[in-house]
Length: 389
Image 1 (cartoon, one colour):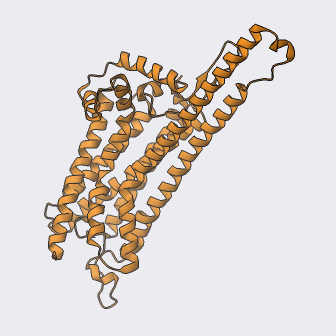
Image 2 (cartoon, one colour; image 1 turned 60 degrees about the vertical axis):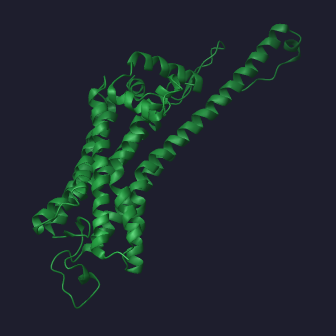
Image 3 (cartoon, helix red, strand yellow; image 1 turned 180 degrees about the vertical axis):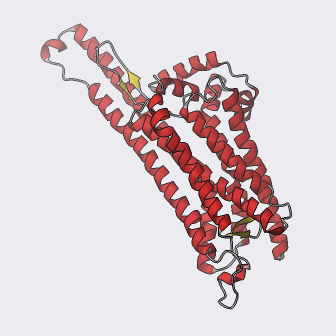
């Protein structure tokens, strides 16, 4: 049976390692953005860039968990940056989902987003997180929390014993509910709602497209004509192809939505479970705390995986022998030929129905139907260029 100090040592090491990995993940995203041909030219890239910066702040503070903290000033500093990071990064995820809703659901152009919405998309995570972090420090709510410094009371037992007076952090439980549990749930619900709007948009556009390409009944005169028979045969093949493409598109969009939500929620699942368990039972669960220490600081790693996924898929479609790690290293090393990737993106789009969702036109002069959805099967640069047109 490990002592409490031994348990805290294990948790501190876990947070230090995963915090450092998250910093590396966010730095990788920043490197890819700044070395890409478009750099910070689009709102999407600027939002991801801002999210990565915020994650670096919080993850770096987590990585210092194993360093001894002497005095309240050092503890306040670590708690301030940890809270800023774990608060601003998920809200930046919400900003990114709002960006998708604006571009896909409401079909807003890049110029409109830059002038009307981008200031809000950056201001919402930064101002809320910065303001709440300052408030927590000002109210002396940042204290030693076992493996690190965050919202806690000093002494810790004062929250559960009426005979012990709290010297600092008397409202720690209330603030944990507000800035921890409630904030996480609200952001999660809003992100899920945004993803549902995207899926609804795709399904509605697919339904419209299928209606436009439905087969019309052939009359008796047409049946007697070889030309009419050929037309009906071609129309049948065309409809089968359309239905196949729409089905594939729907699967990809749904997959993208679930991956995006999972990338946000996975780091916060165990902290929420630990918080509720601790509140209900009043006991410290070491196993849950280890899981918290392993997953919570990893937001930057998950964000990096989601960010590079479209490029990795494109490279592996081009070279089926290329491993996931090999494709990732090609991206990092800058060996991706943007011209070849653009060609590859067009081929991938044609095989799945569209370059940016679904776009189908035939010799029958029927208007093409587009589903403007940034799926992960397409290269992110191509998505940005299309959305700005």
